[in-house]
Each structure stands twice: as C-alpha cells, then as structure tokens.
Image 1 (tube, rainbow, N blue to C red):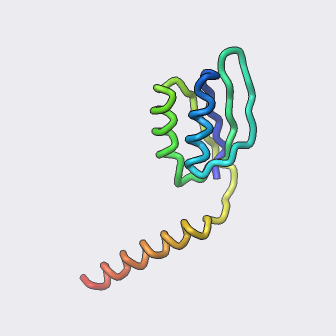
Image 2 (cartoon, one colour):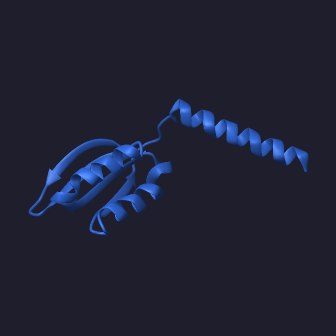
Image 3 (cartoon, rainbow, N blue to C red):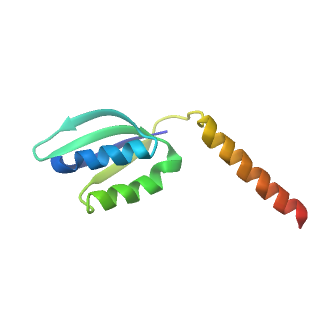
Length: 97
C-alpha cells in the first residue's frame, strides 16, 4: 500500500475522489490551501500506474500527485483468485511446450 497525496484546484476534487475510489484507494484525509486542495489516500501498488494516468486525464494535467510506500497488505480475495487463475493458465501453457 502507498500513501498518496493529490493536490489540485478546488473544482476538480469530486473527479479526483471518484477516480481514487474506483482504483481501490481509501481516502484518509483532506487539506485545503489557497486555491488548491490536497486529498490523502492509501492506494494499492497495483493501481498506481492506472491511477496516475486517470488523474492526469480528469485534471487536464493540473494535479500534482505523489506516493510513498506505506506498508504491505493482504490482497483482496477476488484479486487473489484472479491472480491464481492467471498463474495456473501460464503454468498449463508452459507445461505444453
């Protein structure tokens, strides 16, 4: 899990929060500045690349985003199941060659 901070103009906060939630992020706080707000969230590493691109799109590149490693966390059951299925498929393909 990574601690993420996204800073952007006030009018973009709703879009940023929606993107964070759709990428399995947990909102941990908000701070406000003069014309910008900062949203703090905890985000899985697997979602970071897609999340950066999504935030760049919804803010037209006006958001500043940073992330630092926070802790290891268990993978949700549905994600673990998909990873296991994908691994089995690869193993079966490798066994056939």
